[in-house]
Length: 277
Image (tube, rainbow, N blue to C red):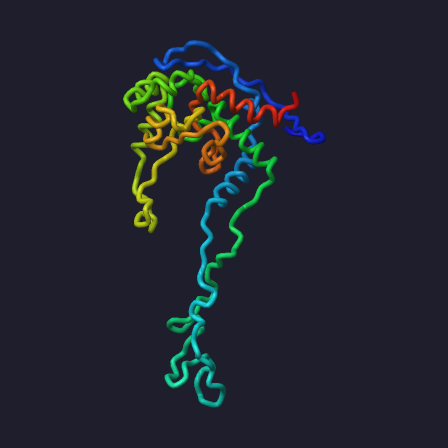
């Protein structure tokens, strides 16, 4: 539940859970309470609106030339000739211009000026992103999305040393196996399939399910470069992570791995805006 007082948004939220912090060897080294944003209620309706807004914002407008099929001297011959009163090419008598004639214009073609972006208020979008982030800490939502893992608690928090010390996929796989997350990568690889339809010949032949989302402080770090090529994986930074990554398909509860420094940045991004201190 949320109420707006002045310019401050007060939220009635649950207590964020306490989760373990893992080292680069996959060993538990400490525990930490998640920021307050992870205790927000999950607003599926807002998440769906924000997802549609961000998804349609990326669509490329397309349409026909307004004069396509209309550049012709065809005119109707008039009445009294026993023929249909459609525009005809002078000297030939062949029908033109109309949508039922060869080379004529389309009846209702796509318009490049059609409004395809579903807009959303800034506060709603901000709250939807925070709500999608909160869903990553609820195991029921993560399991319902179809992720396969054996970790006891989500999201999985790893120390900052992981970003700089893990530089190879081999080491990243070893860490994910110890954390109980590698099975979700295998699920995404196993379910990769050829797309049905024309998209297979338009540069998007394969469809891969979404697997793990890594939120790191630097998307160019060695660890981020090592894991970004794994099936279904996305890498994001705390200040740019959005609903498209947190809730693919507008379904909240993505399996997420967050570094300690990125967790602090997420707290700065949302807590000072959504909560009155």
